[in-house]
Length: 385
Image (cartoon, one colour):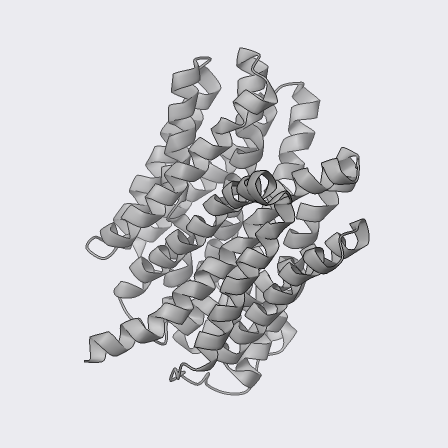
């Protein structure tokens, strides 16, 4: 009976994880908006940057907000903001409203990323937390995977790609209603709510700092691979963008497979050993990307990065939350702030590519991120986070 009760409580949370994946529609939406308004690359790139920017600004304040109103209410607010973000483009479609919509999408996603993970830890505890977080990431990945498919279907069948927004909005509203009706017992944070200074002071702890930089590298590798994979094929094999674009699909497909299988593997095996195996796959892949000029081998390397990087986030996050159980809200806020790595890495990759006039420059930045995770795996061996 207790297990059945847990599954009932997990349903709205998994719907919320699905809604968390809506942020990834920014990629396909940016391409459509760019074409609809004849934007330059710089103007179009403002949209994804608007999403990632809010992770830097709102992550820590969200941790503080959770101390005041609780995790469940914070997730409900995040879903409401996400719903509003998805409503705007369908009501009024202009460059300005899309900027507002994407900003709200980023703010809502920041609130959700920070609050949903520790809320889940109130239902699932101990060794099962990492595997459940990984399953949540798999559910999130399904939404990310479906976004371009739904947009293409809506454009072809309904005559307007923007039907993507109300379709996703229905799910967000459903998740809001179900979570509002679900009672979840939350563990109280010890002491008074932390200030900004106290939140950032947690970075003075070596384990928390290690985890924070690890999250930055994970997201940087994720976004960087998505951006760079097609460019490598275009540079080395002379492929068109349409043909090379499948490289991103390969990455995302194997990342989704990795999330799904990881949920079961982590339920049975040590998170530390699985982390080391995951990083080893990425090391092999990055070496291959420096060496190979063959389409099949490049695809295999991209797939290996997808598999290897798929479970890094939940492992680091769950270990950090378990390391400081009395500061889960603040730790979660800091870890999610690390998603800002999705802005930093592509910028550095672009600079290095221009400097070397080759995508080898971008691969060097990816290699640095993977090298950090290698070093982190040694730390994980020495003692549990």
